[in-house]
Length: 178
Image (cartoon, rainbow, N blue to C red; front, side, top):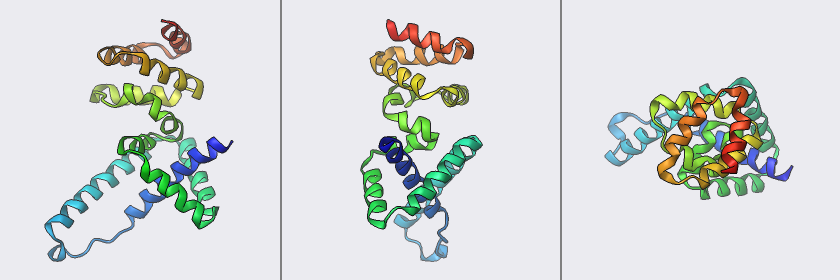
């Protein structure tokens, strides 16, 4: 339960940070330095990425995030600060992994070898499959991803996409035993 709360608080921290970045009003263009323009461009890119990620989540995941944000807001300020600091310590790739939603975000460290570089044509089907998988299947896939040599991960990902949903769990078990 504590692990789930921690994961949800990390997610809520990320979502609160997302929302905070979306509510800023930019200063007039004439007052912006070149460095500030770059920061603003990066911020806008991040906001578009977060908004796109949010729109790709199903309503159940969005509700789970809203619930986490509510629970996070109810925490004492010092605990919120601690969670924010923990989140800030994560590397950028792990922070971005949370954009994929609560379930995949929590599994991101294990799944990252398989998901870090996905060709555009595989992205949508792969995300659909990952969102369909339960936590045990995601954990098994994470173990498989770490054991698979880098040169074979593309083939593994393509196999995962090609496996019918009805036989995916059995396929994961077979690949796990290899």
